[in-house]
Each structure stands twice: as C-alpha cells, then as structure tokens.
Length: 285
Image 1 (cartoon, helix red, strand yellow):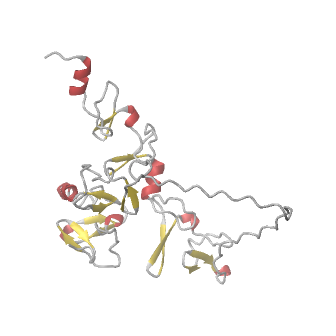
Image 2 (cartoon, helix red, strand yellow):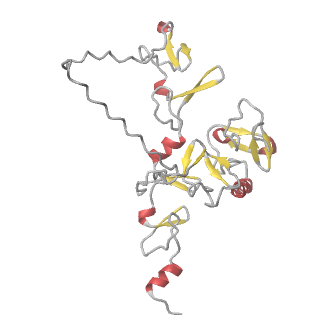
Image 3 (cartoon, rainbow, N blue to C red):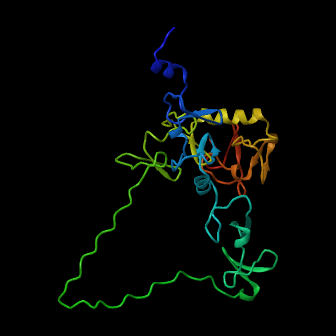
C-alpha cells in the first residue's frame, strides 16, 4: 500500500524512548532503545549525553548527576565517593572517607598506616589526640551604625522563598503535590519508574525510586532467571565489590541489601523474605 512521507514515518520509524513520539530520519540508539537527538539527554539535568552516560534502572544520567544522586559523600570533603573509599567505624556508625582524606584535622598528616584518635567523624594523630573537634566559627559582631540618630534604618527586604520543584520533571510545584521517598512530586509525575503506571494502590521502594509491585516482581524474576551467581538479586546488575549472600543462594550488592519498604540496611536487624522481596520487621506484610 502506498503512504505519504508523513504517515510512513509515523507508522514505521518507531518511537523515541524518552518522549514516546515518532522518530524521524535522525535518531540515536543506546541500550537497545532509540532516541530523538534532542531527547538523548541526562534524566536529571537534561545535558547532552554525546560524551557518555551511565544507565541506572533504564534511566540515562551524565556522570556528574549519577555521582551526586547515587554516590555517598566523603565525611571529610563532602565530595562524592567513587570506587575507592574507606569506612571507619565508630560504635554503630560507619564514616566513609576518600583514602586521601584520612588525615589529622590539625596537621593534615596521613593516618592510613598509623594509629590515630577518633572522636565521632573527627580524626587526629596521636600528637593532637587531646584536641577537641572545632566548633563552627561565630561571625564577628557588626560595628554600631554610623548613621545619624534621626535617620531611620531602611527596612530589609524579605528573602525570596525558594520555589519547590518536582523531583521527576524539575518543574515548579503548584497546588497539589505528593510527598514520598524524601522528595516532592507532581501527582502526574509520581508513577512507576519502569512502566510509568499509576501508584494509587501503593508502591515499593527500589534504589530510592518508586515501582509498582508487578514491575518489582518482573525485575526479581528476571534477576533469578539470569542467575544469582553473576547478578545482584535486587537490581539485576553484575556483582562487584562487597556482596551479601543469603539463603537460596541469593547474592546482593551490599548497597542493595535493604528493606524494599523503607530502605533500612539489614546489617543491624533481621529481615524477612516474601515473594522474592526483603522486608524489615516493621515493613513485613
């Protein structure tokens, strides 16, 4: 059957994975998906991904956004931790550091291969072990005004309130909003991360993103099908770094071994398994 150019493009060119509109003559393919060139951008900041991207749960991120969202900050410098970091325990808490940031707070001597004194998140060499952690500096008192006595001070302008934005689309929030996972969303934006379906009947937290129960079941089934010896039972990605093995030979990334309901790590509490998902005692259905 003959078609005009417009209809042929709409029927046979496929759709963009980002905007779901028909693809034209020029498109980009990545991870078995096709995108308009303008849609091939970071899920958070919308920057072009021509120089590379990182895939997380079928969402594409630039390296800077991926690190700011999913990487923990260093206790000393607050910059994102990448592959190499050291956890220093203090009681029940773990403080992560870049190796180069494990230094004395007073003299900056490296503490990697020597004994040191720890006071919470503060580290000191033995020579400065009696030093107390520095308190935030107080600002100097402002000098008295030199304005004439009969001159009235000018009223200060009230600071402009920062406008709240939706965590998904980054656009300003208006009258209605949904508060979930420590963020605010437009009601229309708070949907399943995978299928984009409604979450009116509830959601499950997975990698700090909302999913419907059928999609979580499908992801877990896919993980088991791929084999737990090579992939994490929670996120389905290749195992690397620290892992945790539980019953039924299921293996998890250390960061994925958490309650699907509240994100609590199971290092210090019991967990319960139901339908391939892990729960803490409070969230256990």
